[in-house]
Image 1 (cartoon, rainbow, N blue to C red):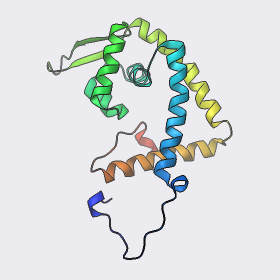
Image 2 (image 1 turned 90 degrees about the vertical axis):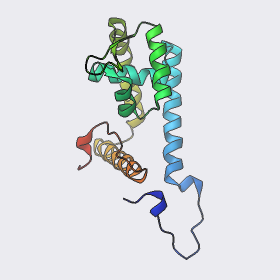
Image 3 (image 1 turned 30 degrees about the vertical axis):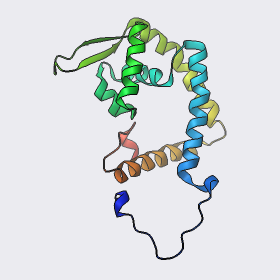
Image 4 (image 1 turned 120 degrees about the vertical axis):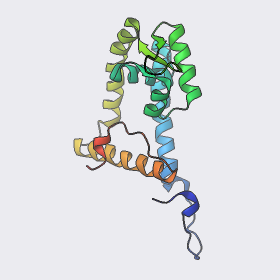
Length: 173
């Protein structure tokens, strides 16, 4: 893949950009619609932000993680992760402990209350996902996941770095 500075343009007149047909715009609008819907549910029922919920999910899946590892896994910026971690620590949903491997960082871990909250919210999150994809065939869902992974990888390559992948095994499928 080439970086943005290496992209070439034809000498011909460029095609008119139609926002509703422009894929980056469509992806952003779809993401905002889904995130907004889910964010309202998390905020209303559980007083959680989307970044806080993502942090809880990562810790539930992967166990204790440093903030740097969470940033890499979630593609959230470090300020967002730090703010989410502070809020969850204040609510006693996660704890910070010294990183035995690197004394300069801390490991974040879910508390029992954090695990309980994850167990309560996860079925709701899965229900939202099911409602969003109910009109798609299983093969279409699998294809959509593969295509999203490929787009994420291409965007990372254009930006000059490899993107974190939720499921690296999806790339070749």
